[in-house]
Image (cartoon, rainbow, N blue to C red; front, side, top):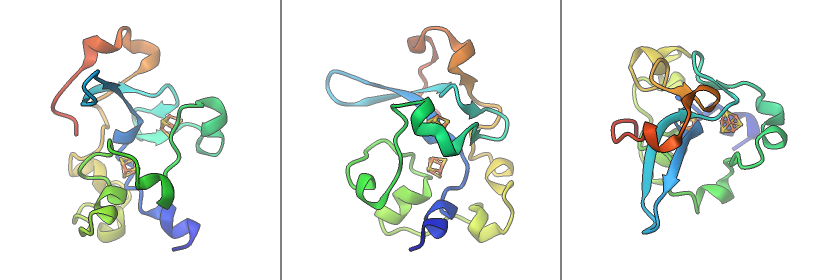
Length: 130
Ligand code: SF4
Ligand code: SF4
């Protein structure tokens, strides 16, 4: 798979750019607080090319890193690929429409708050996002 093909798998949901709390027992508690670089309207990274320099703990998805990551949402195309599952009908590669991830209600559009405005992370935990 070429780099462009790999990148095109991303549906633009923005879910992986939400903060998660790793509990002492290893479980994950999701929040609706977004990385400061996420555009909470478009659900796209505000500076994708320089994301790692601007947000050092941003995790870059690669075929190698995908093997060890346990926090991608069930809808994520990379997770589906890893699990041998098909893309959903709303995925832009299937629908042919980049906005279908939003109209299908899958993305975080209108459902998250930037860490710039959120305040304490533990006040924004949720079980409804992923
Ligand atoms: S969760 Fe997966 S599909 Fe959604 S934005 Fe992140 S990488 Fe892309
Ligand atoms: S730097 Fe960009 S890609 Fe990385 S978590 Fe933040 S918004 Fe998402």
